[in-house]
Length: 328
Ligand SMILES: [Zn+2]
Image (cartoon, rainbow, N blue to C red; front, side, top):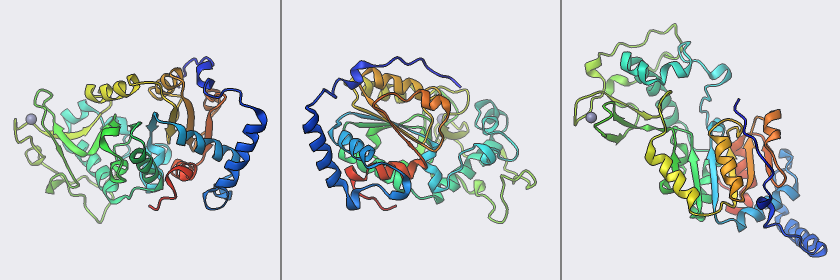
């Protein structure tokens, strides 16, 4: 685990001046009254009303919001996380399959792996976490998200494309394997008829033989005739420069009011770097994640919100005072 050294950032609390105590108590009371009833957090989620109210008010007053969105938000849609028991595909680690060297040697196997993932993602539906984040983005032009997920669910929920950096690419796009060609195209499952998964067996089971596909029958680039490949960032590959530039552009445009970390740990790189950059520009941080480790706690600072639980549930619950209750 890569941890960063974080120093308390005084500027992150500058906007919380020291108001008259009586006035702030009165305001808090009024706010609490406003959020009682339908807008109060679900009692089963153990979110305190004070936390809910402080977060709601802060989001409403924020104009520049930066989010890092990870696999945890798609768990409620049935997407595999490739962790724990979900981890292996035909007894392979995903890192052994989503690898450009492996694609060069055995493109058919890599295409089956990604076709399987495409099929699952295409059959999945955006959940209320995706919908809530999309509604927030529609309502706030200054909301920009780095989306680590390749499942397309946030896009299908209506999250505006210009406010999102797909840092790991998308399952629903193919590109030419010839780096100098530049051909890219939207795709749906199956990418071509020969890559249709058999319906009666599960090809992620190593006991099931993979259907044979000749290299010549795999999808080829219409411009240079090299093989097409999934437009995802494979292990060992860098995040494409235009994607990084869109992130830097947002960061350069001004101070960030609020950083949301949804469905991913904020301890590992690059999450820790994004969080630190946001803190340095004065942001308060809200984390929504099922996991909570000692290290995670170490990264929480005064003024942060940490919501432990299913990320889709927690983010939709905590933002319903801003975007309303969404239905998935
Ligand atoms: Zn090409």
